[in-house]
Image (cartoon, rainbow, N blue to C red; front, side, top):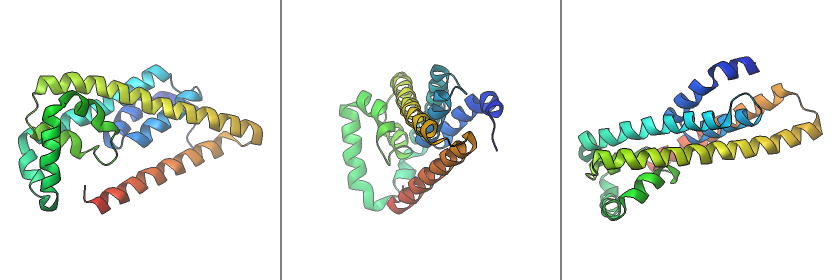
Length: 187
């Protein structure tokens, strides 16, 4: 079983790596860990933001280089892709900041923005803002959930081991459900 020392020692690195690879579920788990005192909330939120930032920057540059060939594979979605590109050009800042909050666009969004010809400096600036906003919001949600869980477990005298097992199960189910939905959507 994972103990508090392991979380305290490796939690920040896990938050960066987890947010880079998966995103929301890891950010929420990191917020729960922060609520329970294993991690510091502001540092955890910044680590989550850093992971999201790195992932989005990488996808943006892949989109600039290979975006048209990648997006060209989605023949059935071309009208939708073209519509999104026109919207991105009208409201670049809103799209760059908000795309990470749009379900189903976590991976394709930055790729599409990169393929749409958005300037790298502009993307960098708004990606920093968006990543920090997303990191604090998602970690904050986890922190709030951690408060609810703390109250529940205090009333029901459930051990911390059961809490961590339940939190890991919820995260695995969340990540699995998202993967299944993405596969069905073809994203």
